[in-house]
Image 1 (spheres, one colour):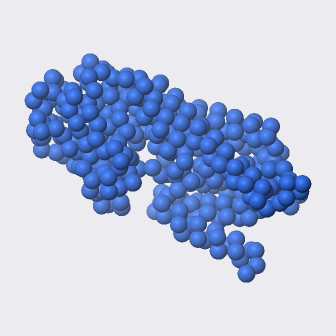
Image 2 (cartoon, one colour):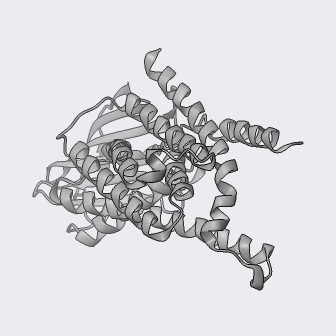
Image 3 (cartoon, helix red, strand yellow):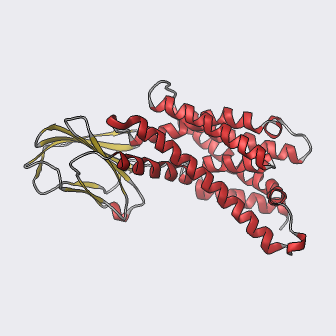
Length: 340
């Protein structure tokens, strides 16, 4: 089979594998307990849905709690349940868990908001579905939770990673890579903060389609550069990274809005979510260069070894076809989702 057919087959396979998953989407559950008085708590339980089917996840409160009648609504692909619980003796030192979480790949962010304005924020996972309500809030707890959420979001955001990979294929040198990554970081940090804090509001579905289109644009620019017709992205990659980074920041903000921010530590949580995104991005770049170095080391004698950037150029053309085809699938899929 010739190279074009192989590339087309690989692109279609990747589209089938990753397209239905919506690429970037992280759908965590969200549990908030807001204190009404010493023994009474108002609960909000956001349960992710698969289509219109509710995931089999339920809140497990301590035995000293008695629940009121819950109200349920289906909003934006999730079931929102609200009720009031009276917990004799309070919740401090008691365990709260999510039944069914170990059987999923879903995380849950739990927040306990006390009447004094302090809060406890905890990230629950399939391997750790239970937490203990602490007597005081911890800044380190907020840092740990939102740093991990930022790393997880970028590493599970296939569309964001493909954009970074396409830029990597395009820049061709370390100084240009540093400048490009810095511009991308600055841009998405600005819109992440602005959108999360409510300073700007844009419809999310068109933003996601535009993010996919930005990946297609960079993939096409790689092809043009290989044909000797270098465009704006090849000549000034940091400009393109900054402009499209503004779009990607809006995508990050959507995930953070779904998760929520602790009212007593909004700047801290926002800052470390962004730091987590950057750490995940740098980790991805390091893994890519590690693989390129390994391929170079295994494929050539030391006396004939070539620069890692030259090695990257060898994968730029097939990479552009695969990245561009997958991103174009997302453009059609996401555009259809908000037009129909």
